[in-house]
Image 1: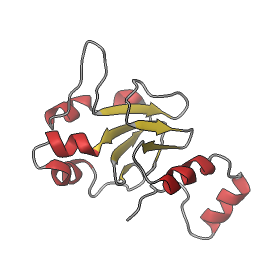
Image 2: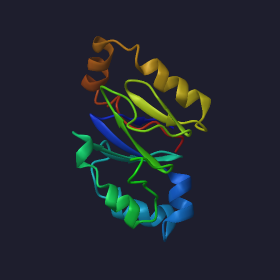
Image 3: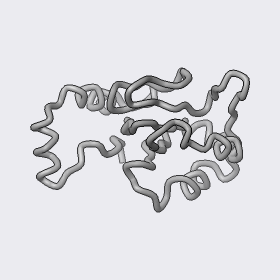
Length: 144
């Protein structure tokens, strides 16, 4: 399910968290997601995401501390990546795709992937109408 891309977004594969983090996704969620702004710190069915303004604000050491791998030499990880709003992924991972607004796991539901793809063609007038009606079109798209 797609997660919104901020100026800089740390995106983590929940399968890696479940397999490598002591306490799994529940422990990760308690430490990094719960109680924080649901736009900036989100999760969908397959991903956790943490938004920031700049890529150097993400705490890679925290990801290593909870069991996820990061290679200092290649400056990359198979378990997470950073996606820049006005750029691309800082390093590629084979489990993630994105457009200018949202990122999604390659195994997400096809209808949610399509919603993320369609989002990029929405007009500002439409987005304004969603906000005016009390909605937020930038929330995480998920099946639950």
